[in-house]
Image (cartoon, rainbow, N blue to C red; front, top):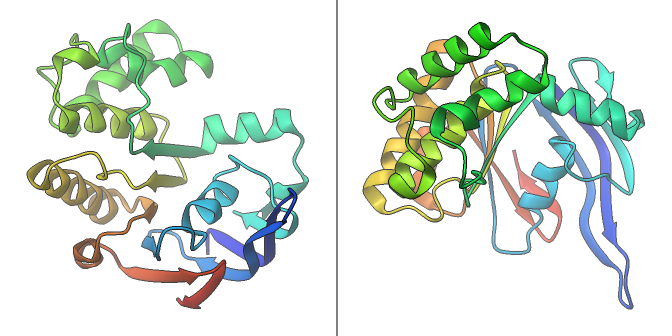
Length: 222
């Protein structure tokens, strides 16, 4: 297994506390492509954010490759995210002034790779996602589907243990959505990439190995 979750809880404090996750227990195996599904407010994005170290749980344990990440300091979490995890969001999260190539090699620069290495690695992964002819284009010069493929290349350039995708096709048309989902499936099958994806689209189930349904912060089936 690559992820083990034990008795995970997340409560957002306020005038009326909101229990976003309630005693979640979960195991994800290495090489699985898992979808988190449920209605809006079910807790699926909250769970993804806990697993991806983008937020901290109120209580419980998250173990990734034998390490209890909940105990990490903020500095340790930042390093773990950079070295071990990849993220794809629905809004692409690309800096408008960076070309596709620059967006993708930025994580490798931060990890200390030399210029020759990070340019070669970024070029290679962009070619793998079908953007070898768009290396020097800015986001405004690309379609939504192309921008999302840049975001996927950026997420994969450091060869992450786990790729987290939060509704990655929500802002795309049907044709572009299919391209992205097929790309995820290809990555999962060809290189054994572990993927955890939040989605609300029933049709997306055919691309994944397993669907985990959440309702009111509780796992209904897994």
